[in-house]
Image 1 (tube, rainbow, N blue to C red):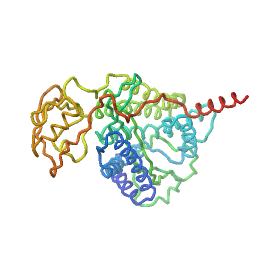
Image 2: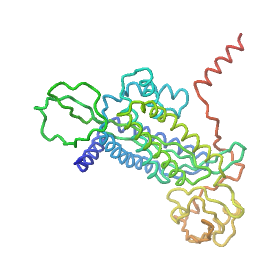
Image 3: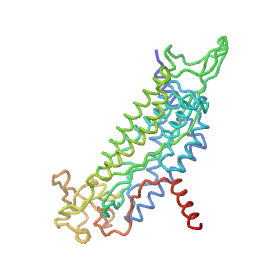
Image 4: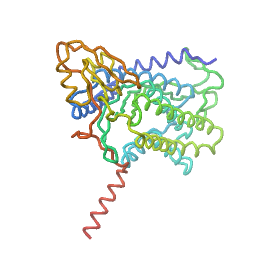
Length: 418
């Protein structure tokens, strides 16, 4: 019988132990720096910030810890062995791929390339199945974290589309510290097995150790603490942040399950190793390209309505947020004053009493919300969709390959000098 409870307890203990590791707090500092940069960008575009930096960091720690428990449980369930992952090869390849394009800094690409190199050329010395299982489990964990993140890490932006139109959108960015426990296989004389060893069923591990076991010895696994990090970057233009995350999580989860199945099957059917390696990076790239094209070329969601003013987002701890106003709501009236322009909104706020009603349109239904100014400060706390004349906005650029662009620039300069 599989020791589910003991394994969960071990996973939780590994996460708690990571809180005492300096590298864990170094990653937290990097996470905080990324959110600080997002906060500065939002202040530049809207003059206000829609989220609390402290809250973002706390949520990153909380969700990252959940991801660490899930990841540790799945990796232990399949019996992955850190000694056969070839991390010393995967990381340099990931850095080289990052020089081609920043989004290639992902184990789906680096792990797939290293695994395919092993299949085709017999180098480097890694276990292909183990590498691809690691890629699959990390992406399963990421898909779960994306799904449960909600609107956390959703930053409203003014986006310029390819046709020059300025629309409201959300820059979705999450960063999670991921405390993991990985197993390292050790050959131990059968007569010297220490007490307190966790007993596992006969079918375990699904990934057998690739090595020669000395006679009279058995494989035992020691747990090694590793702190990793996961990141998610996306954009919501045609969808709400919640819808976009659910779609991304679903597609990434399906990709990860297919890759995991192929990787486990490749233990017994070696010809599947090349297939699984190509699915790792080609499947991931296809997923990004299809999802991004559909989102960016779809009908934009956050554009000025025919009547009223649409809310792009609300500011944390303001009357609008406390009253339950949400992204996508259309402000129709404030204190019985019709609102169709920003100037009319400003005038209505100035004339409104401390407590007043706001009439909004939500999902094609008119509803009223009671709003109360805080400490006699007449600020509603909404960020509105762009009207088209904004000075600060985000412009999407083509997906350029950095190293190739660098080579072209150098070649162009040399050609001119000749």
